[in-house]
Amino acid sequence: MTVKELSERLGGELSGDGSPEVCALASLPEARPGDVSFVKDAKYARQAGATRASAVLVPLDWQGECSAPALIRVKDPDAACTQVAQWLAPPPVVRAPGIHPTAVIAEDVRLGRDVHVGPWTVIEAGAEIGDGSVIEAQVFIGQRVRMGEGCHLYPQVTVREGCLLGRRVVLHSGVRIGGDGYGYNPVPQPDGTIVVEKIPQLGIVELGDDVEIGCNTTIDRARFGRTRIGNSTKIDNLVQIGHNVQIGDYSGVIAQAGVAGSTHIGSGCLIWAQAGLSGHLTIGDRAQVGPKSGLSKDVPPGEYVLGLPALPKREFATTLLLPRLVEKLKARIEALEAHLGMR
Image 1 (cartoon, helix red, strand yellow):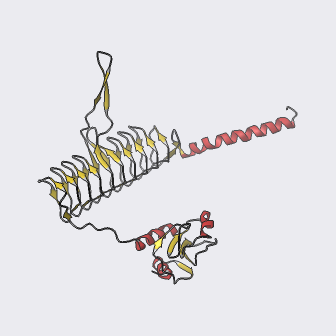
Image 2 (cartoon, helix red, strand yellow):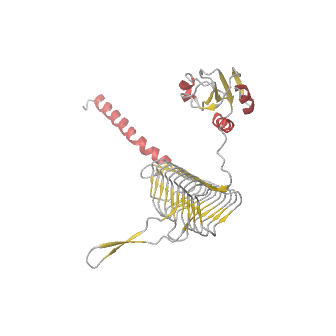
Image 3 (spheres, helix red, strand yellow):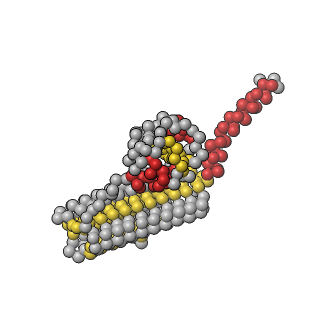
């Protein structure tokens, strides 16, 4: 695809040389001839002035320097970049329907039409796999698991007994669904010692339709009932979801966040990276918990909290500003005292 053809497909305004062929996307510093890059705002102007890309997507009002031989002005460079990525991406890997001879599948497993089961995968008794699902290598699916149509489980995923997956669920490598939650009870003994008894974890995990979960994330089964992840919720890599947590539809949880047991997170919420949420909290719809925040209180709908301990955004900003204001006030007092001869 030439730069000119790309501009026409985007409905952009081309200035410069439209003849070079483009075949890949790259960041401004890493781009080479044949690559397309993009600029979101003026803070990337220096990088744009030194890029080797063949074309750069820029906002309609872009006035900065750019070393690329062509600019494509578009309303939203970020969205346009997503479109270009879809056009230039290599074709996805397609897994043909069929069962690898090394797979171990119980006799009563119900496999839908056009299912792919990869090598060394284990599917235990009573499991149901929906039409068109892809189960890649070394996946473990426990007894009585039910999985909807069009799911994709990447290598080395574990889905423990009794768990429910909706339609089009995507689980990336290393995801663990349905392990036991953290439940223990210390019991004093007559001799003064303590025996730590395990509390049975009798529930399951239920994932709604179109849920996607990143690599090495764990979601614990409920102590009783269900740990539930709502429809179209997206969870990043290395996230821990405790037992009996409930997350609504269209929410997001970003890398290395942790949610303790029995916390309820509403719909349209965003839990940013490395946030830690205590147990038994309620996070209202459309609320956000900022990165590296420590949350110990409920959050009202639509509120943005951050910090340690987490505070509403305005209060948090005040705590950052206050020490600077105090220093300025001290300096003014010292200057006034000196002026009055008090020093």
